Length: 162
Length: 398
Image (cartoon, rainbow over all chains, first blue to last red; front, top):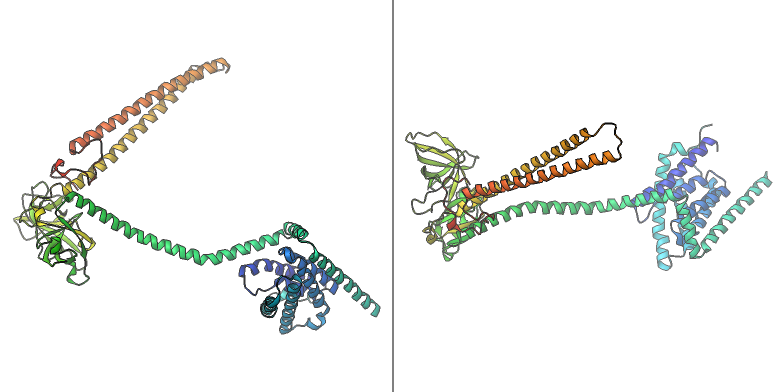
């Protein structure tokens, strides 16, 4: 990735982070979209797995700092998701919106599973309900929003012509 | 190349393992250490993001509460609209109570039930009947003046003919007794509403716009002194021997919802002073306002004169001092002299103000004594003035 592409990727990454802390609380949905996961996934497919793991770790810590009881849970989940996304980018890094949507959906769902299991706050039936109902819904919303943003921000996210 | 790839993979695994170990370490931190770590992050490099989130949360709360606020605003608007009508009704009822206390006895309060039919603008149903003492040809009045006359009586309700009825007539006169005539309804047009015309006024008697016309008491139905209307203008008719005047009615029957029905035995005692009291109280209040304005103006003039005197004194004192003199002791002496002059001028101004106030009060009292026989030191209440102490004053404007 050249310098221009890196700058565009950083800008889009920051846009996603800002959206996470503005649009998401403004909407306040029960199954919210997760812009941090979108930012992580879009960054992970552009960097090597070690860098993706570090990005995920940092994003996770940022996320956890606003919920101190779960400090570390988000960092673990995002590290794993970032590393996995970067490791599997050969599978998912395709110019296919449906495949990208599935990529986002899977990333968010895996994150939620790791997060809620690691957080250990929700248990029993409530945990099952969260993981099998609300997390997939949230993952679906995240995937839809991710595809929409991919479509809107295509000029920023596409690699520059050689 | 294969070796490089393997070494890269090993590096990636080391890094991700390190990250996971660090995350687990953070997860394993005791609660007493998690909070300081998280707080430190929130207060340092995450502060902008926290601020953004707080703003977004506030925006969401505003959006959510907008509907509730709008509903509250609508309720307040509705209450404000109701308050206007309630104030109007309160005012009407207060006037009615005032009229009742001035009449003292011999009246029956009733509600006027207006119909909405074609002929209902000339008649009205009253909520009091013969059981309450209403009889045929009992006058119906409102605090402002004449409303109509009862023409049919049932035990519990009665039917009244309003002054807008084509058959309604009342003998009227000017308060000074110089002009008499017969008042009847005057339809100004298809949608113009009703006025009153005063017919048969002798040609030698002239009325000015604004003159009050009251019932004359002739005929035995209406007692003397009930306001009928005020003169608007003279209208030309074919009758060359008499004048006809157009009156603005004292009461719009459509607005009369609470009325008084006068009993027949009350008519014999007359209604002198019932409406004159109201006019006199209004005039007295107006005179008090004017007197207050005069006193304030005199006081302001006196104060301005005092200020001028102080400024002149200080200017004279400064002019007497030698130019270029040292400001130590002579300056102190000059300032002291100026202060003495200022105090004297202020005392003169205060005396002038007090004199002006006394003069204004005396003038006001004298004016009231000329036109009003009620006590000078009190503002007469409408309900407390004895009717027999208020002489009938012809020509008193309402």
